[in-house]
Length: 513
Image (cartoon, rainbow, N blue to C red; front, side, top):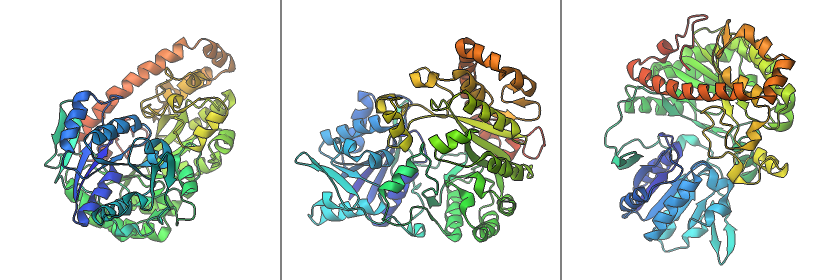
């Protein structure tokens, strides 16, 4: 059968859709990938008209989205239904809001879609009720029906490498849809994951709710074997021979055992041979694991800290990792001067008060230099426990004012949501501390200024009169956009990311955000 897989988010990698496409092709079906990332909030009539032409020969149209791309997904589904296509909506948003999505699509996929889509195809081919497959949900006579869930895929080694064959792939850009027939000559990182699920239950993340939904269907956190992990990474390197490094987006790469990382430290450099970046949680960082990852080629490590307030982490985020564990992990990482530490913090959180934010600034100041700091603009992701908490507490009234449409990487965007105005001055200071930090400065601030800027009288004055901080925040957001452009340009010129970030120079490292 012919299946069109459409991804409405802006990420080029579209890992979920690509793995489903690879499974379909392995079973002898035709799959067309259509990536419809767009900075616009809605697709134009011309784009939707062109899309209808692209999917005219499809038997099934599958659409995948997060919450941010959900409104666009509705447009795509309506366009496909207008020409008589069977429509299926999957992805995280569909899993968390199946009833909402069921009002648009013929069938909703709740959870993993690899074997779900094969069941749908088999039922269609055999003339059976294709809506009754496991993981499916749909409306019938005004009643919403959720079918039985299939077990979670326990053995990730059985899944094929994501589909980058370019056999039938289209990308949307400002000029319309372009067919991609050759591999882009990219020196950018290769995004790859060999695991599913997360061990934590953070309220701001969808994983906590997904764990609840799929309770009893199998182990939630699953990992590829190291052998398979390296095998797939090696194959991806052949696809992108110009790639500068791997970005391993497993939720917590250091959650693997020492034995696994020992094997990885031998196999990855021998068979892949590129530097890599990975994510980790502070409790999982140990001397031995760091030594092994550095041996394997680690050049940057991302640590989710989120807040320096113990109250916030415990009562709001449900991520009770105390500051001593954060500092212990930071000191271990800092011993390896060839590795760039990248610490993640969440700002714009209306549940935080002045003391919480001052504790965060204090923790940031205690981190051993040099390091990089990234400030994420809080979004109440629809379906998360924090979203439900904000609804119950009256901070937001619906998905519409949850901030789901925001680019949470683009800075402290406080203008569209009133709940972003709380403690704007201190949130703005943390945002301005993002980027490079060394002995002398934290982000844009010389370190000697921070004690003055966090003085109680200065905080009170600027909290009452936020003109200064608003101007600084908007200026820094503009700088971030320019810096992103420059970073892409630098990556096209310099293959080794360690040269861009000057890894190894003690207080001169991390030159580019």
